[in-house]
Image 1 (cartoon, chains in turn orange, cyan, purple, red):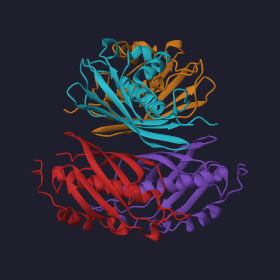
Image 2 (cartoon, rainbow over the protein chains, first blue to last red):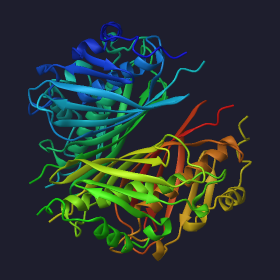
Image 3 (tube, chains in turn green, yellow, brown, cyan):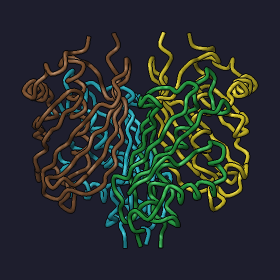
Image 4 (cartoon, each protein chain N blue to C red):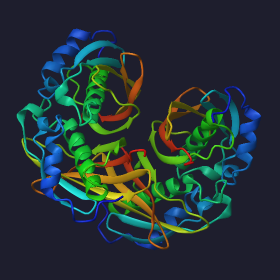
Length: 140
Length: 140
Length: 140
Length: 140
């Protein structure tokens, strides 16, 4: 059964994040959430740079995947077991020594697949990356 | 100018990897390389798990991106400045407490864009993920 | 040089459409355009059905590609020679014996690549397909 | 239940093609098939050109979608009701006044999703486009 809208808080999603070992690497923080949406903040870390001092593409992809994972929980509940089936990323501008925010939004929550988009913006509102993601719902 | 085929060794690519701070997180090792191809080994690490004990999707995406980055250097030289324009990942099977190998291969090395595929296989040869990637060559 | 905003009309884009032989198959009509945006109308045609009476996926992909091609002309001029480098489509709901509208919008108009999204909606506003597209600008 | 391997012939798939109204536009012909694979031939048609005399991208996408649809039938039977969930296309080289062949191959036939790749080659064996596709199996 779907979770009642509005029942999931930023604090709930923050707890989910702490249960994922890999998320600790990135220091993700839940910035905000709403029905079918979630934004996370990704602080700058020198350890996540590529040569040339720009943030590694893997950080944006990890952020988009996590933001969508949490966005889905706002719709299907904290225990939802959906997993990523596919995702695509377009890298539009580099981030140099800067934090960014990644916002994911569900466009279609189907009976079997959930589809949405995510985007990463720097603090000036510049679009850094754009992502599309499909999650497959847990089979009952 | 393109680098002469065969001039780039596994050891050369290993040195490139050590120059990338973010690659240290994943403990990637260059397993083999050839003209337009590179395989990297990704050892299992509990720190990179998602809840449920499966390897986080971000690890596969990071591996594919790095394997292609190195594959391109076998064609365009160690100093080549191409960056990822877009990549897509399909997650086909989960990896549970296991290492895997990611192999990238160039399909088209154009004057402005380089396109290729990457795949991650576990030690039994099972296909875990499949990726397509476009790099954009450095503008002269 | 970029075309001055607002100088390109719906009628201009309609003439571009008539110059493309393949577009005649689909009976595309330009519905509206704006700076970096274009909507086309795709009338229902029995000849474009798949078995089961639903509109073939190829029609949505053709529509998205054409809508983006015209959206780019609103920014770079009617003579612009950009071509599609890659596109991805997610099919979210089927269309049965119905017309639809496809709207494309540029998210980043770079010096070498142009990236944007397109979506097809039926007459009730239901999202049928979602697309992302990269065009590569003509090399001067 | 899966169809016994080898039971599906090129002629069977040719009949499936004639049942799809939209396929008639393209004059697709089944060239060969095997377990989890299908190749179709796409003859050149002036009606499918874009301005500049090159084959419209929509033709390659339609071909890839159809070739995978038939490849799936070699595994799941002629009556299989799987539909495209998503597909991505990279356009690698243009085709000018020439026919081409599109070959699709299943990489993973899962219980709910089927994933594969397709590629279009011209008569000289040049890679024109590369595609990845996910089909969703009919829900029982």
